[in-house]
Image (cartoon, rainbow over the protein chains, first blue to last red):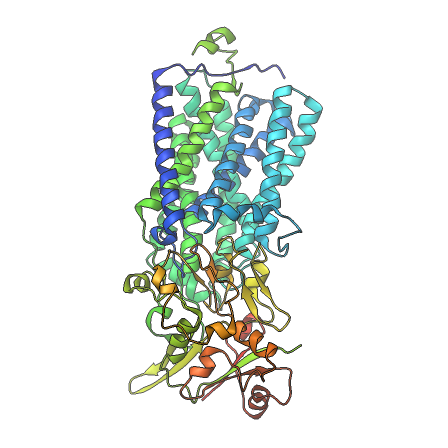
Length: 398
Length: 228
């Protein structure tokens, strides 16, 4: 329990440059959102055939990162793994910021974001049979639980932390399985429809959350010139290996099942159609094969650089996994009637990347970056290095 | 309480798209530009699809007019988080623009592609056209008069006509029918009460074999097709 945490001083030039850059891009993102809100969603890439675009992809991606990050923080606070304690606070804080970004993402995707309060009128104005409404409870509760959890950690109430940690991991798992259920319960869309989807989402969350945590931890420790205990990273990377294998098996089972009728045609289209490169290169390559090759490599798997590259690939790859679920999942034309449907009703949809949508999406990320920087400056999230030369006084000056 | 349904005789349908046009005129659905059509952003409450089977010279094209199927087990009603789309007691699935938050979950869940997202502010004149049906004043206000972008739209079985007709004591299915039924030159569409054994639709369904689209999803839809 002896770890001491500190803030960063936040007076260096790099800090301010980052702060200003993030602010500018957040502002641009907000302007793009206003454009899409005032003139309508025709400035975005989504259409009637692909109703969900980049904001939804980013949302489920961020929820994944968040849930994974929170579950990992529980390694310390619930399961008592002391070696992860230095990064546990950061993990909780990151989880809260990421779920906030995810909720922003949902709001950006709504056609009428000013009515988003309707999502939280549980049992009154909501149809509680809808997975979306149920997920409203899950996301809102998750945000609250995360805040209380972080508050308890800052207040050093050990017993309370442990209880909250248990609730938090349970809830985080629920949040991500609920998100998977949004997709998995839709019988109309063959690529979505699968009972394994909630579990696939959960393992994807763990994988991407862990990979992001590795990146953030290494980057921040480098940036603030703290000494990093490399054993933490390597034990995390061993965990990452196992989780990637679990995820890959889930996806394999899911896709194999879908190769049977009646889901065969859309799945084959996913494998060979215009979006196949996202599936094969980003999802299968970046998220599973390349990281596993690196992490199992006898030499590269044992270096910090190797682990970092693998984590980067995973974070990009899981984004590809989300993309190759949401976009091709709806793009394949619905089989209204047996036979070949002529004209536009039988054509697969395409998803143009538009500038407004891209900057809006970038804005979500920079907003989170901004909050993260502000948090680092004002909250005691980073451990003071006790093994290295740093004392807590020196650490505070950086 | 009646259960409104539609029967479409595929033997009579010639694919003239009069139903699509009538629907656009009646419900003031935006036309959509060629760009909108290319990007699949135009709004259709009623569409006619052509389905081919076989190869030349032995080829067969079926024309399937597709309004909203008004399923009894509607997937869109199940998934809507805001109760914006709901089943009325007479079986019509309606979309309340005032409640709709525009999450588009219903578009994802609909097996018939019956739903469209209104993705842009339409020209003002498109909504206040002088060529609207003159007896609109007689029918009164359309229930959701302000159309706005950012919500999902769909066919309503012209429930404003039905409600008005019931108020005036007219016979629904013969005197008062949805616009697409009224305008079909081939009289391929029939509208009426599926629970009423004396209605025209019940007579047709008992006299001929019928199909419904995508039965495998168990949507129990109320638009029946009489195959050729």
